[in-house]
Image (cartoon, rainbow, N blue to C red; front, side, top):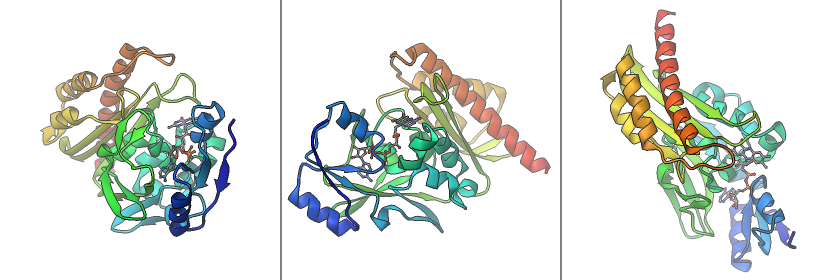
Length: 288
Ligand SMILES: Cc1cc2nc3c(=O)[nH]c(=O)nc-3n(C[C@H](O)[C@H](O)[C@H](O)COP(=O)(O)OP(=O)(O)OC[C@H]3O[C@@H](n4cnc5c(N)ncnc54)[C@H](O)[C@@H]3O)c2cc1C
């Protein structure tokens, strides 16, 4: 492993000063992705700037909108007193990540900025239509998450920019969502993952948002499936159509984890299962 300096600034201003002094420095949050690459010699940064002690990156607030600091760990997400009731789909996705040890240090910002197609929080955040708040010494900008991912390992961030927080509107009480993931074993990256969000009035679908991971170069909104479901009655035929369109919308690869065909099959199964589960849940809620 190459030698590098390590800095732990306490504020954004300190970060900007360090960046000016060491232009080749890289950011580190939990280190569960970047340190693997440094140890393997894929990356040799002259310095790592930790984001873990910067208060702006650790905030979670739930008011008109919901804001989650980028340096929030998966465990902090899971154990937060309000988040499970307002954003159950995100908490559900966070619970599927790695092991307790990985969740204790791995952050939501690191999961997104690493830009892996199999980042497990990405499909949930895509269906919640999260926005990424990004900041540099010159400016702050807000990017819809579907524009954040450019390709494997590549986000739309400039090198000096930091993902500060994720913002999303609070879903209303008729919105229900589910996140599903398949790994080879329990502690594994996803072969495929799908999140489904529906707003239902009886069997009528007022709003549909779907997204998938590990089945394209970036985590993907399944917009064609959304068009099938939105403003439609959810019948068995509609579910079959959504399943078929979902399978046609993805472009998976074959690798050590899975064949492309199996990944495509999983997406179809999860889309069908997710819709059925949410429709059944809405019926059950109405009866009680
Ligand atoms: C054993 C193991 C199991 C794993 N299992 C899973 C799994 O099941 N699912 C899954 O999705 N992932 C998994 N991962 C990957 C990893 O743990 C997660 O992606 C984690 O959320 C990364 O967060 P981090 O804080 O550790 O990121 P880091 O490693 O600190 O950073 C990752 C990248 O993002 C950049 N970065 C981090 N934060 C910011 C920011 N706020 N602004 C700008 N850039 C930033 C860093 O410079 C780096 O390039 C696993 C990893 C390991 C080692």
